Image 1: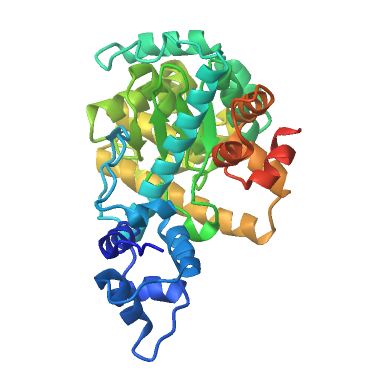
Image 2 (image 1 turned 135 degrees about the vertical axis):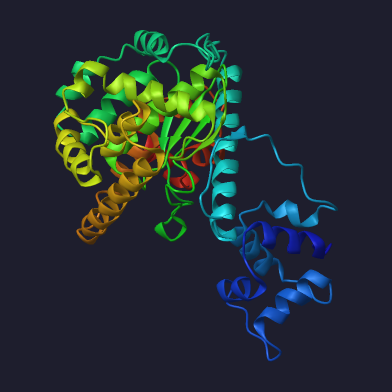
Length: 386
């Protein structure tokens, strides 16, 4: 049997953000000369992993098995623009996890797009790329809410942040956009912090995707969803985080915040110029639950209206993120819900329904369906209700 390419073994490990020692530990390698030496020998062609061990390596590095038999690294598929500005350099592992997540989302989107065309149900969505960031955000808000039939009064009348997000998601999915909640690579051990990414938009004319990092607070989900929706209307695919250093990100934030909170309502909050940080945190916290809004979004409006500085907005955002992380630990200690209920909610009704129709139409295999839904092929029937 042909041996794997040692250079590809090294490339894939480095892309996964793992040192030789970390890889050896996760693969449970043992050797008298040292486990990391075995990885080094694999990468120099001195020794080769067994077929079983190579499968484990492929899983750990999150690469198809065929990758290790290539002569050169595969060309990276276009993944849109990186709209993020990171105050601190992320670790190689965090970068690798995000790269793997983006690859996975694009694979899912490509499978769905092909299925829509194979079933002859693909529809050209004319609103994708229909605006530009030189337009007045207020006018864009009108276009977006009209197209998606979003009512801010209905949004605010929902019971809580969870239902408020569900309301927006249903409206946006009805326009032909798929909305997923994903914050890791399948387990909490690979959670990706919101500082690394908050949302992803794939602005495809036939199968646009939005991914919201569900490691954020539920109030923030709605804001991120609308931010990425603005990306879809702009026709700009890419990955975003909380910072607004680019004109595109500031524009998308302005659109999202004005959809949820108009100037009249914001002015009623009593946030004025030179407000103390403690006071704006107090006001934002109180109004957050009342209006089903992210407290960070409220303070963003204070920044965009020139009432606080960018640094002050980052300070308040850091405060609310810390509070959310602390409350999340308490929630996790109480345990989660049913696997399938949770998985279905993360996947979204639009994607589940498309997969189900595609299977029944014979244009999507169980294996591909499992890839799209993020489950094993044997769990597809339960997920889609077949």
